[in-house]
Length: 154
Image (tube, rainbow, N blue to C red):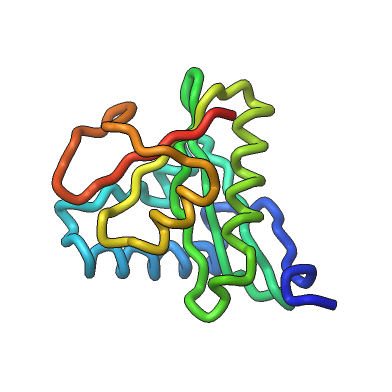
């Protein structure tokens, strides 16, 4: 069995302690890069209240990656993509992102958007490789000195 085939991608909830742990790690990482004032961090409660859908990647029953999507009228927004450092390069992010895009399309979204930071070079390369193109901004966001905005048709 290959490493990639041993990964299971399943829906997760925002009150799962393992999900909360990965979100806390992501928050700490982003705050260390940009400072709290420059981060757009939806809390788990905000994600749950907005009916965001989340997927988790498991290896041997250990949660090693997460991602979520918030749906709006005609688009979805990718949120909270995070893969544990030791498991990056295993194809987990691709599987989670593909699942979130599929969910958005089935819900009637025409586009998927996301916001990431300029210092997250690996994330930027990943989204570009996944077919995302840079846009000036979307939704409620305003252009700033640290954010990069991407979109992809469903």
